[in-house]
Image (tube, rainbow, N blue to C red; front, side):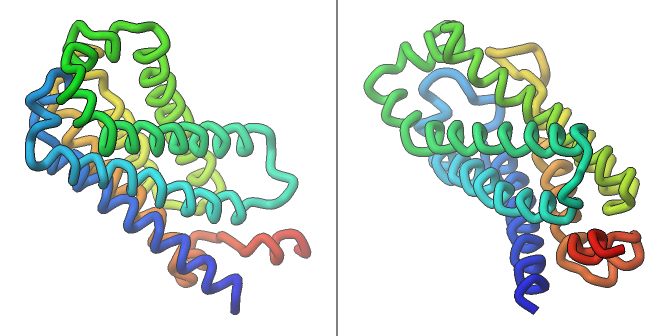
Length: 221
């Protein structure tokens, strides 16, 4: 009974995470990342608060995804989870910075967050952002493939996660040439994928139909 309640709670975390990721991009000032205009917008702090909350909630959901695997999971499965979890944890950090520190930086040191400022040109600062998105892409693409092969999620769920994280991680100005609309679409699609993964974890009927078994049952079979 306690294990069943834990599954429901983790499923809820992923569902809420998906909603938060979608709201993050829907509320974000359109095509405003560098400079001071975006951080001074009324929707910047709410948007990046959903950024922070979406990533934080995803961490709790990912722990349940891991617990669904057998203890003797392959190195590929462990690597997939590790990359997704690490990338998500780093995205929690960027969410805290952009939601709660970025507006103050834009107010008192605007040149730092300008398009040609250190935030986007310094190797360490821009490198940390790039590594975060690389880990998100590698982690969630590989995790989706692993879950699909184990019949834990449907083909639709897999496509939502894969296509969503690729679009969501598109490098927009000043980090790259991708149009902003790809990030918006990615937030919605990736959020839908996370929410559907949460529903898969929460629904015992879905688990039975997809061939998933609780870890304890798999270990004794």
